[in-house]
Structures are given as structure tokens and as C-alpha cells.
Image (cartoon, rainbow, N blue to C red; front, side, top):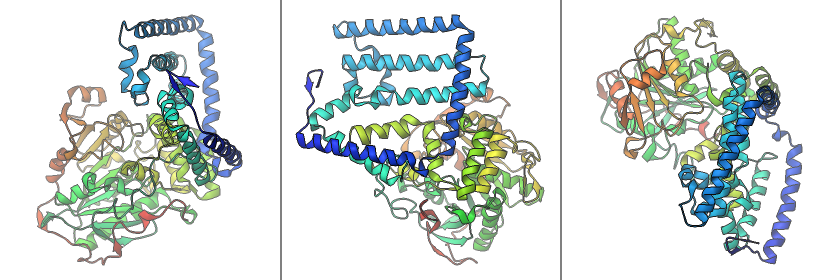
Length: 595
């Protein structure tokens, strides 16, 4: 076999090993097909919805044959132009026509500039773009179904990328020739290991699981656990300044993942940066719940989370007033808690900051594909058996939101190129997933995503109190990110309109994680600010001013005016709460395999 003059060959020993491993992989795949672990409720019910959406799309095309004929003509014209450009490139009359697509990370390698593979690449990009455009043009399909169709078509197009196949990926072919097929042998070993590790579910490794140790390389900012209950541990971090702001900072992380996304390595730890600015930081570290916590509700997360933390902070350092931060669902809980406190005339939280948090779920972005009555019911049925939503189920859904980055790139790297995954702190954290208690998660899916009740005054009730976000009068700082697939920035903006106090909205560059965890020293991305908060996100963006770098200094200035005067630094354990153990504590180390 050859490609562009390179002969591909493999020794007899490699071929024998390939045959043996292929048989083992086939056997493992057969076992996986029968495994209960392969039953992912969100994906199973999504398949039913996909079929219905495809039928609607087919009917839309049949209803307008003229549009279909025009679309086919446009595609053939695109193919013809690609063919002409390729012939000119082969003849040396023009540069490779597809060079503009080098921004697509799948095709950045120099091997893709070879004429034959450039032709394959351009035809694929033209076809996939054309397919997605047809869905977008189907205006006779309702918006929800059209959004689902776009999602399904994107998954289909991503899966069929020529980069995902040995025969059409020039880098894989080159490395196969250079290694005598060793890369394919190593890739099959990785595939077999992942099947065995997943107990019937194929989950490509994104990172070397031995690359980091929680509490040593990650989540290593010094501190003590000073309080704990069934749902959380409360960490008080050790000061790094002689004086600190009077008001402590209470941080409510998401419980969909673990808190140390805000305390990765020292160079990109938001927690350490807060401490360096002179804040006494208290971090909630949520438990990784098993079946014994199946009945824990959203109410419990409020009562045993931020409300319990407020009492503990007062005991620990004698301060009743705090400023609070919530990330993702942690921000949703923070604002719900503020509404609860407002109803009780409790003013202990003096300001609120949310990172990429939804309050208005009218448009939840691509996650909306997974939300309808049948899909929620399927999740609830599985949770009824286990008592929780398994972390792998949640991860499978989130990975599909960025399939090229979180699925196919690792498929190519691990299985086709036969490489080991890199040591990357953010991916290590991403793989360290958590479960969701059944009662809480059902409430969250139904009341937030399915029925969007949080935005309505009295739409939900927590601990017997009707929740009205309009009763919140403390100053709020909302951060959204421009490329967020989980909490789209316009939806975060809609939520920022709901509290009744003065609100500052900031739009950061990049996505749900990288846009938030962006230390100033990195000099990356940008952010936008405006002094007003018009009803329309478009009007806000038109008036917004772009700034280079991180939004952290803007937040520092905003919160500094609300942090109280300076007092002597507080050491964990010197107040009314003796230390229980060193940070980051036991809860964050709990694996999803433990119950």
C-alpha cells in the first residue's frame, strides 16, 4: 500500500499482534453491547428524538422541491470549484485552495496540504457546511426541532470527518509507514484498555490518570477543613497577606464537577489569586453522592450548603456579613439562596458574583437537545434504580457538546496515532467527575430546564419559601463567556435582568472554563464591559467596550469597594471552629466508583 510515494508496511509480528488485538477488541465490544453500563438514558432517548426530527426534515425538503434542487446545484457548484482549484494546485498554478481552513484544528498538519488530501478535506468541509445550511434554511420546522436537527447533523458530520479514518488521514498514514504499523497496534491496546476500564462503556482517556495528584499538584492552596456535614466540607484557606478584607468570601462551586477547577496549579489558581488579594476565602467542597443521598433535594443543597456555610463562617471568624461567588449551577443556587434570604430579611450576603450561571433557561443552548419530557423521564427512571445520575452519563452528554475537542481528537490521538494522552490539568479535572442525587437532579431538570420556573416570581419554593429573584437587592456581578455551549452568554444576560439590585454584566472571551479561569499573567483573551444594562443583549454588546486580557482585575475593583476595611489576617482554626483536616479534604478525593 502507498500514498504519495510512501510505502506502508508492517512486520509479520506486528500483523499477528494486530490480528490478535482486533479479535480481543471485537470480543470486548460484543460484551460491551450487552453491558448495563452501555445504557446512557440521555443518549438512548435522544436517538428517538433524532428519528422524529429527521422525519420532520425530510418532510420539509419534500414540501419545497425547488429549494432542494437549488441546494443540490449549489453543492455541485462547490464541488466543481474545488476540483478546478485542486487541478490548478497540482499544476503549480495556484496555492492550495483550502489553506483558509487551517484554523480547523483537525486539518492543521502539513500533511493535509498534500493535493489528494487537501481535495478530501475541502470536499468534506463543503459537504458538512452544506448539510448544516440546509437545516438552518428549513424555516417551516419549529425552532426547537431545528436546533435538535442542527445538533444531530453536526454529530453526524463530525463523526464522518476524514481525520477520523486511517485511510483518509495523511498524518496517520505517514506515521503508520514510519512505525511499521506500531501506532495501530498501540491504538488497539488503548482501545481494549478503555473498554475494560469502562466496564462496557467506551470512554477514551483524555489525560494520563497518574499525571496529577489532588492535594499535591492540584487543589494545593494551603488551608483547613473547618466544617462538614453530609453534603459538603467547608475549607478556610490560609492567608498570604498580613491584613485581609473584613468580609470573607464564600465560594459555591458547581456539584456537577469538583471545586478545584478554581484551584488548579499555582499559576492558574483563582483561589490562590483571591487569597493573594487579601480575601479570607471559604470554599464549599461538595460530596460525591452515592445511593444513600438519593433523597437529597435542591432545598437540602441550599440548607446544608451556603446557609450552613454562613453559620460556620460566623463561628470561624466572627463575621456575619460575607460576599459570595457561585460558578455554573453554584451561581444558580447562590441566587436562589439570596431570594430565600431576602424573603426572610436576612442580609448576611452583601454581594453576589456568578460565573457562567443560568437563571433564565429559555435558551439553554445545545443542552436543550437533551431536555424534553421523554428524555427527563428516561433519566428519572434510571435514577430510580441507582439513586443518582452516574457521572459517566453526564460526561457523555457534555462531551457531545464539543465532540471534535472532547471525543474525536482523543479517538485520533489514542487509537489511530497510538499516542498516550497528554498531562493537562484541566482535562484531569474534567475526567474527575461526580454524581447527582436523584431528587435534586430531577427537581433541577424539571423546574429549571424543562419548565423554566426560577425566572417566575414564586415559580419554585425552597424550604417552604416562594423564590422571587426580583426581591434580591444586593449588588450583583454576572460573568458570561462568549463561546459558552453550556450557559450561552445571551441566556446569562437574560438572567442578569432578574435581580432587583444594581447589576454589572461582563462578557469574557473563550468558553465555560477557559473564559473564567483566565489569570491576568496569562495575557489571554479579552472581555467586554458596559455601564448600562439594556433589555437587549445585542444593544448591550453594541455599547460594550472591549478590553484586552483577563476580567479578574475588573472584578477585583468592583468587589474591593464592597469588601469592608482591612483587619488582621485570620488563620484557619483560630476562631470557634477547630480544623478537621488539611485542605482539600476527603470529599474532593471521593471517586465516582466509591459509594
